[in-house]
Image (tube, rainbow, N blue to C red):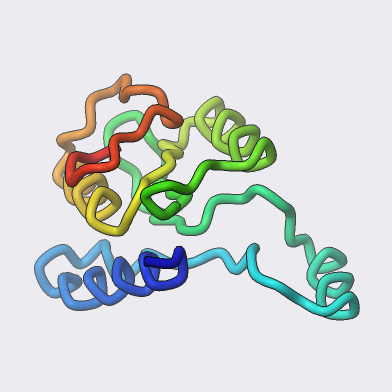
Length: 135
């Protein structure tokens, strides 16, 4: 499944579950990726788009975290150096920032996060399982 399909599936799930977990209505995508022509790319860069910013943000504080950023990858996808740098910096600023391989691990991470099941010191954001366990 492509990253687009993984992310669309996660957003579809979140919209369906927002009645149960109202905070899910705050989950949004950060449109950083994708192929663009030079003019559009230049305009977006002038507007502040930066390479490496994670795909999704849930602006809900839990425990010590100010919010949750998710970089969504396919099962075989790997974060770029810019993405890894952003994740490290966001973590230093008090956000939980994680790479998830597939929409289902991302779903489980979000549920754990919202239900405060994420420990204060999660595993490395770069050593993510490729199963249904959270990252």
